[in-house]
Image (cartoon, rainbow over all chains, first blue to last red; front, top):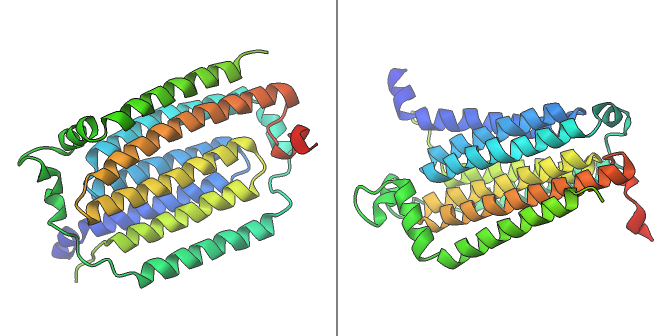
Length: 178
Length: 103
């Protein structure tokens, strides 16, 4: 039993966090009150960060917690509290085409599942836990990501910063009292 | 017996999350919930990128995930800005109330 836990620990953690992520996602789309939906979304974000950790993407996991769990979550909670919650209860929850939408999303899962189960990916190319050391032995994940980001992907990085500036100005202009 | 997690597990989970998010976008009529569903879809894509980064032992997937997160942050800020502007105009966040552009 102990040996099973030590060898299959990551797999069990994967199933735990996958279940939590799906439960949070279902909570988002099924709760009438957006506040409960936002809590479900937070659970989903944090579970996905844990799933990133299980795939040795430590830097992205921390960015996920900071940006999604911190920034975007606060933004959503702010807006939910800003708009009148009592009014939200009165509105009809589902649109006119909800049956079609359910069929479409079920078909989506069926098609994706069929394709993914058909494809044989085989083993990873190298020892995956070592791939952060690809640039230099002993280099951590954040350092490796930084090297790649600031050398090969410097231009996209700068464009992303300009994009964020444009988005910020746009959000301020849109939110301004006309 | 030893359980093992493969890339296929991650792909299936991300397909399920994508479908739940897509259903939320199509079905729900509350603008806040629709925006939250869009975030779900973007997150499921990130899950795929990370899974393949591990599968191929290539960091590019993680770099791309960072860019996706940046774009998602901008999208959430602008989307919620539009929501606030629309709420001032209509005094409601119900999508079916926004029919000005129907013509």
